[in-house]
Length: 362
Image 1 (cartoon, rainbow, N blue to C red):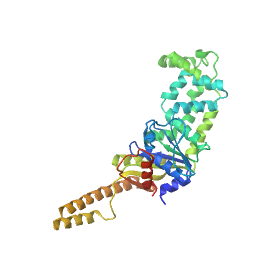
Image 2 (cartoon, helix red, strand yellow):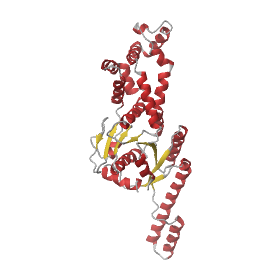
Image 3 (cartoon, rainbow, N blue to C red):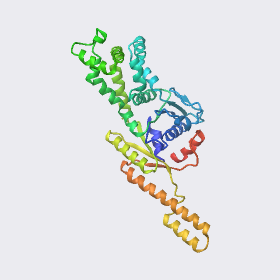
Image 4 (cartoon, rainbow, N blue to C red):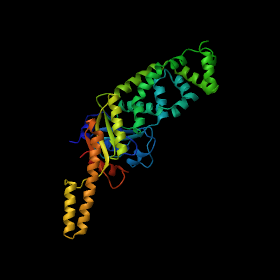
């Protein structure tokens, strides 16, 4: 049985990681399709705002921030897909933690909040972890497949819950959460000079919006902290598996090795490695065998056959070099490797996605 088949069968969350351009999104879609064929109710969520997941699934109208069921004939299984809508996710989290609708409305209407929801560094990654938790607790699904952004940003996705917790504990946050009675005349005589200085840097309007935001946020930090802890626990749960996706190019393999080490340092492990676009060996023979046959064909004045065997020898040499580099850079992870050969066309619909699955799940 393929190692990836076992991952699909035992997991409740599969996180697909890797550098850009190695087929990570397509692999995530293929994992979701295979899970549906195995009778599971799978949802694939992409954090990347690009259209790659929609293209791989053959959806010309794209995806939205709500799970969309795909017309796949899988018996009892189901395949769903969605693209992260970070601002909409942020608003759902705010409304879930607000004490009443009026508090949520004040926050959502705040200019500082709107800027934070759309432009603040790290918001996309944290909202992705929130989306993962929301889908995991949704009774419609029993498997969530996450297509993460390229590996450097994927680290931010994994660390986002902890970053939020540390922010809630930071003295600057606690200062801004101090009760106010006089608006921008601020919390106490001791803090007035500090906020006047901040106002000179960012502008009084921005500071006013920020103070109003934190005033409206009062009382919600406990819910945010509890949710962040729950997300962090989910990422480390026994049912969460990490699948590393790469290609045989040296730079992609080096990036994959770096990411595997980063996972290990944080206490995660790689369940399976997918290496896309491997050169096939065209049989079990060796490079030297093909070269010997090429020489014999040349000696018997059969140049066309000699050229074929020479070409085969070169292809096998490339394939052997690729496998050697995969072993050298990723062998220390101990994760089984699933090889996918170079395919004649890109994956652009469910039929070609199913064809890819024949290599991922032999």
